Image (cartoon, rainbow, N blue to C red; front, side, top):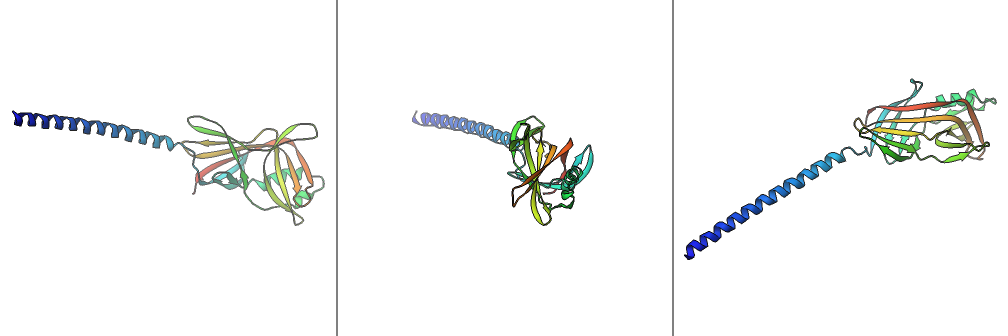
Length: 212
């Protein structure tokens, strides 16, 4: 009897261990599945660091090319020569005709605005100002130039804030800026001259391919 009882206990323990192992395997599979799903979801997150080649366009016409560096902020050279051409066309003094763009990339900070399955939408973190007519405008971005050897900053003043869109599937970027005036500031003296454009101009930047 004792041998039979011992054999029964062994069979019971063997059955219990088999059930325990099966349960652990099911749990491990479930955890592994959750991890894989989380990793797949994580792959939809924005690229934290990347470098792109892209184009600036106006009315679907290419006016400049530039690289976009994506990181905590965006860095891209604005279409300086095109913008200075707009500025020169309304500058009666002709001073800006002597301007020499320095080709330094503008730094753009973004604020999330929402997302869809295909895109993430962001706005520029732009300071605002009021003009003489109490009209609110956005100072969206700027670039540097030299006039007679003196450093000046050219700020893009816009009636609406600028925006950025990133396609989550293709990882491509689009920037849109509507410019109504250019504010040229002497960085040494702080004196500014505003060049208001006859008609607001929208410039777009579209990445073409990732290179880094």
